[in-house]
Length: 526
Image (cartoon, rainbow, N blue to C red; front, side, top):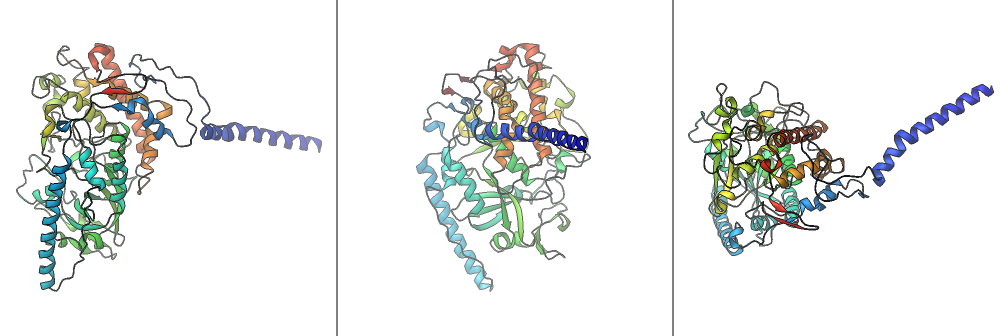
C-alpha cells in the first residue's frame, strides 16, 4: 500500500515539474519578456544571411505583451529624419488641392442632380446621399503628405484615421474603375492576358468625397494558387492587398497606398448607388438567393465567375486612391524584368544571366537610384510571392530619383509552400552574375539591408510583427499561419542572397549608405 502511495506521489511530482518547465516558464517568459542572451550589435559579414547584427542597441526590455510591433517602430532605423521639405519636395500644395477638390465636388453635385431627375422621370427612386466635404478629411491629409521620399511619414496620424474612415464611412456612389472601363475598348491581348471575368474591382466614393478601390473576396484564405496556374490567370486576392500594405509599412518603404478590409452590402452600397447602367446590368440573384455581380468586358466575361454576397454582405479590400492624374501626373514604366504574358515564350532576362549588365547601360538605370529602388521592389515582391509586376509607376514631378509606387499587389500571397526565386533575378543578376563589376557597383541600400536584418531577429521577427499589424484589420485573420511563416523563410533567403553578393564583391561594392547614423536620430535620403 505504501509503495502505491509512493508511486502516486512520485508521479504527481513529476507531472508538476513538467508543468512548471514546459508550460508555466514559457508563459512567464512571454508575459514578462525575461532577458535573453545579449545581442552583439556590430555590423558583421552577411555571408550567413539572417545574421542578427544591426546598428544601435536592441532593447531587451519589451515588457508589454504583443509589443514587438510598437518596439519596431520606435527603433532608430524607423525614425530616420528626412531633409527639410520645400515646396518642390511635396507632391501637392494645399491651396492647389483644395481648389481642385472643390471643383470636383461642384461637378459631382451637378451631375447627381441631373441623374436623379432622369431617374425620377423613369419612376426610379435612388438614394440621395449628401456630400460632406471637409478640408481636414483624412484622405486630403494623406494626399498633402505625399513627398519626394514616401507616400506618408511614419508618424502621420491621418493614415490611421484614413483606415478607419474607409472601414466605416458611408458609400455614396459606385462605378467601374478607369482601367476597367479601358478593358471595354480595344484589348491588345499580346501585351496583357486576362482571365475570364476574374479582373473585378470597383471605385467607391465615400461621403466625405474620399475614394477607395474595392476588390471583392474571390477565394478563402487557405486556398492556394493551383501549381498549374500561370501568374497572369491567378485570382486577385483582396487579403493580399491588405497584407501588402502592412508589409510595406513594416519594411518602412511606405510606397503602398493605405488599404483596409471592409464588409460591403453589394445591394445597398453598390447596386442601388451606382449611376452606371452597365454596372447595374451585371447584377443578378443566384439560386441560393444571394446577390451577385460579375465583370463585363469584351472577352468571355461570364456569370460563372461572379462574386456573391451572403446574401448581400461581401468582404473585400478598400485601397485609398492617389491624387488624380490631372493634378498629380504619374507615368507607368515597363519593368525591365517583365515576364512574358503568353503561354509560350520567354523574356531575355530569363535566359541571359548577364542581362543586368545590359540594363545598367540604359537610361534611367545607368545613374541615380532607380535600380536601387527596383531592388527594393523585387525584395518586397519576393516576400509576397507576387510575379505580376509588369509595370511600376512614378510621380512625374519628382523625376528620375522619385520613389517607385508599389501598386496592385492582389496576386501576392498565393502559394505559401513555394518560394519563386525568379522574382529575385534583378538582385542575383546585378550582383552574383554581374560581369562588369565596376558598372553601377552598389546593389542594395544600407537602410533596406539593416531593416531586413532587424526583422530576422527574434525580438522583431517579421512574422510576429506582421501578425500584430494585421490583427488590427477588421477582416483578421488576413493571412494564414503558413503565409506568415513563409515570410520568415523568404526573408532568410533574401539575406543569404545578399550575403553571397558581399562574399563575392565585398560590402563596399554592394551596399550603399543612404543615411547618416547618429546616437539618437538619423538624417537621410530615401
